[in-house]
Image (cartoon, rainbow, N blue to C red):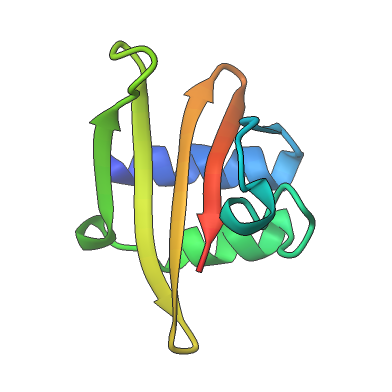
Length: 98
């Protein structure tokens, strides 16, 4: 899947509410989407700003058959880190923080 397709798919998940959050320690600091400090529409806008230069994919450390997608992008001078994977039909967010 191309970066453009991945970007479209995750933005659609955010817009349609097809999102979940991975349970983890430090979630208040590491996943501002799960705590409501940033909305799905705001995350979609951040991802929308990203180009392929802001994107990387890595195997998930718990299951290497799953691709973890990472976007690092700045908005208003604030660097954002967004990390997720897909489990049809949802996107599971691991980290959304600055």
